[in-house]
Structure formats: structure tokens, C-alpha cells
Image (cartoon, rainbow, N blue to C red; front, side, top):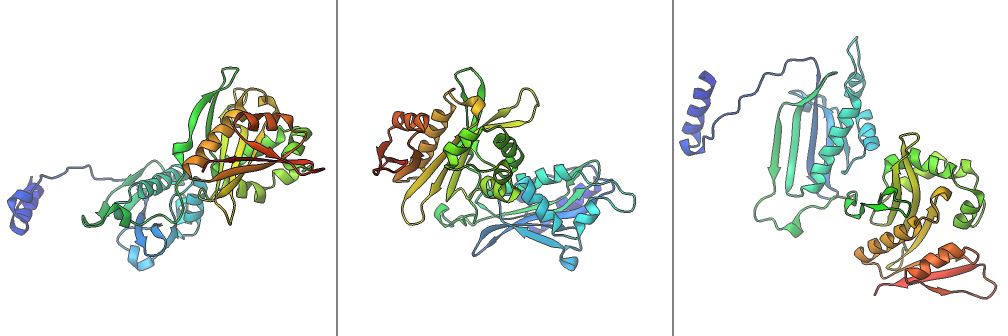
Length: 339
């Protein structure tokens, strides 16, 4: 009651009684933890930039921080934390238990999504974010929005395009199995490695026009490049589900759209696991990829297809592609124009 009266009196004297909107009463948080900071501000060149580091009253003294561009994945969030000194303490020191690092990663990912999806936010700080072994609690936050005279066109744009969730959706195969067709994510790497382990030699040859060893196809450096897309230049869709036998994420097919450097065209590729061929998945995934191409305002999509890849040629024919071939060339050029 004393605190209420003091706050009411102070607001009335300094701002006027009409500005007093009551007070919020919260429990005092009492548990062992580390004070960290999550923040975001606008960089003139890169747009929104995320900050993670040691928080609390001494945030400006120690300046233990790391910067990154939103949006974040769990992998990027962990890499961001690893660049700070407080990270060592968060894992547990001097008999203290480790902070729930998985939960902290998810908080950072969601924070990045907030910054990306709410462009009217100019600055935001959560300081301190109290991280303990049992829970993580935001004790204080500050948010500044852009001025009313700023137009939507003038709002800063993120340097990295956010995950295009608008291109994700469910589908049902001919055998009534449910599939999610969605843009690829960096965390799909383990599932994509298992996907390649399931491919036959013929399927690999028809896709790559050569025999690539499994060790080459599942090499970490290669899968990182494949899974981590710059969605402005490259768009890959995967068909996935939960494997009913193992309970793990299972990728059933991948289609990819890669923009040409000098034109407004893109080249597509497609790879469907042998166990799911002939069930309509390839046709549906390519159809959705063409919808993406139209919405991204591409003028045409092309592909080079082996002459004896009859199934792929049939799918392209159904979807409206035109074919051309040079004499004695083992490849057929497939093309569909949108403009």
C-alpha cells in the first residue's frame, strides 16, 4: 500500500493524475540464476540486429555480448551464445547446474521471430533475463516503436529474409498418408542425411547424371549449404512426416528452385525417395514449387532432364512444360514461362 501511494503521488506530481493507470503487482523472483540480456536495435546498413550477452546493472561495464542478424535458428542461437564469456557459466560452474540451454535457444529463436515479424519495433531489450537451472524468467523489458510519421515503406528491412512459412502446407498422398510440404530449414540436416541413405543408385543417377557416393552426398559441408537457404536466391521444399517406425522426422522428397544470376529465371531439381515414388508426391511438390515461382514473380523455370527419365518428363508435361532437345544430346531442356 505504501508503494502504491508513493507511485501514485509521483506520477500525479510529474505527469498528472490522468496518467496514473494503476500499478502491477508481481512476486519477487528469488532463485539462483544468471542475469543475461536479449536485445535488438536498428543498424543503418543491416536493419534489425540482435544482441545476446551478460545482463543486469553491469551490462555496460563488462560488455560481454554477441551480435547476429535475425531470424535465428536453434543452431545459430547456440553459436551466438558460444561467442560470449557468460556462455561458460550458463553451462554450469562451481557445482551449479546448467541452465536449460534448449529452452534458452527457443527463447532466442522466438525473440528473433518477434523482431522480424514486428517491423514497427525500433528497439527492444529484455534485461535482465534471469536464467536458472529450473526456469528462465524475464524480469524487465523495454520496447520503443517507430514514430507515427514513419511510413511502412520506410521501415527498416531485415538483411536476411525470414523463413517463408506461407509456402508450407499439408497434403495427402494416394495411399492416404499425410505429408507436410514446406521450405527446408537448417535443422533438417540429420533427416536429409537419412533421406540420402534410402536412395537407390538409379534414383541418384537420374538426379545427378552421375554416380555420387553416399559419403559425398551426406558430407556435412555439403548438407549445410543445401539446408541453409538464402530464400531470396534459392528455395527448396521438402515433403516430410514423422516416421511411424522410428518416430524421427522423415524427409520423403526435395524440390529446389535456384535463381539464375543474370536473368529473372530459375532452374529446378527434384529428388523423391524410392519408397514414395509413384504416389503423386513428386507431381504435387513440383506443382507447389511452380506456385512459389509465380508468387516470387519469376519469368520462367527450366530444367535439364535425362532423355530416359520418362517419369520426370511425364510430370513436367502434365504441369505445362515445353521440351527442346539438340540432336544426339542425352539431355532434354524443359521450360515453362509465366510472363
